[in-house]
Length: 235
Image 1: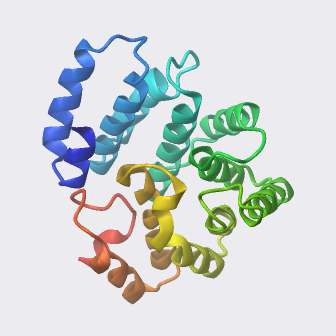
Image 2 (image 1 turned 135 degrees about the vertical axis):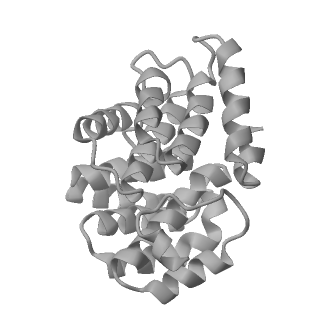
């Protein structure tokens, strides 16, 4: 239901459904964190970021997270990145915790679900050499036929690093090239939209409004409103 409401642009229905569901869901339930992340995305889209961060602390980035570690990594890293795309200030301490967690649990690449979220944490941390070494490892896995997500994952890692250091041309080139194959990287529409939103923000920040408009025009129906600062200028 959370995915249905996201795909069909029904934030009110999503909020009502998830709040009711979570009120009965056990705290130790494996998907309490992930369902809370879905609710936090709705709140972020409505500009209620502090409520989203309350769920971040209490549910999907908590220390005693009861669910799969890869889900904690994805949800925590992606929410922090999305909040910044929406124009909210960086949460440095939260990012440091995510970076430490990412490299403790996933020290080497190989799981696409994790890899592109590790790349987000590495980009923010500014660990340039380590991030590039990991991107080369991803390339080697793909060349050896041992990485179903293909060579595009290395491009994603380099693109988000370029975005973070304000090399917008490189970020745009990398993200635009891999966007058509993003489903290979694992994750739902709600998760994969982060790549499209990052590309949109890169277009906006570089003044390429026509490209930004074309990106939105080609976007298939989904959530109402785009939680990216500056996107309102395209309306």
